[in-house]
Length: 337
Image 1 (cartoon, rainbow, N blue to C red):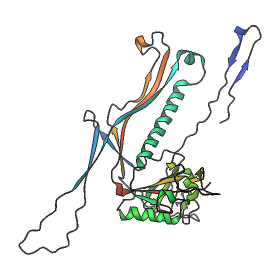
Image 2: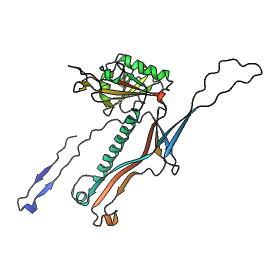
Image 3: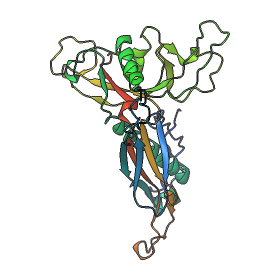
Image 4: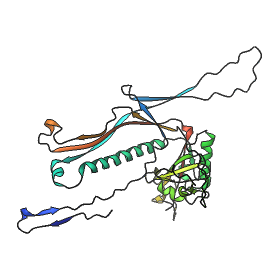
């Protein structure tokens, strides 16, 4: 959006008569798709039921392939359970405006404050959930055997190994199949895992053999999500964000003249999260979760005796946990310059 930020004039009668007229068009802020909560299964923690959510999973029983002996009861099986817990914590922030600002500046303060805080809240939780995903323990390296030896952008082979690990671990895909359309170049998209990656990885993905752009999914594009860029032939639908996780200069050797992104010659290594259903959970407080909180001029009583301060803020309780390590895979790769 273009902006004529200031237009001013002086009537020339005296310095006190100087006036400034601000004809302001508020500049567009940079935003991005908030992708890292997409695979999260959300739960509500009932009010006054404590601060900790506990998830319980009973493990699959071993198969019973031995025939029963006549008249003899088998030994039976004992159940094995796994508990996962997360404790909610409050998050929030606010903007303070003075009475002078409210009374003299032409900007729509309330609307702008709410929009700024809404964007901040969304991006804050996007990063919190992104950082939680980095605690996944199933890791595939695009090339090499450790993060210290990763030097190449994402490849078809790296994707296939990550996909295979998710399948072997019995991770369940999210999306129903999308059938091909009648347009030339469209193709089917199978039930899929979600792949969450940085925009820099997304650029390299588009050059991987067999990658299908979201625009080529076929007749049904209604299910395409914000940030979705396409799918590979294995069964991973990818979403991209500039807020992807990476480790600057993660490699252990300096690569001279490299054509991959690096810090001081050491390759920056990016994470791609391949997610199945119920790999990660999130907790909301069912009621009393704050939301938008507005305090007008003078609402602080004796702490604002001259009605000089007003605030708008947000507050939200939240917790996160990996529910099943087997249902998520982290693929680590370099990115092209």
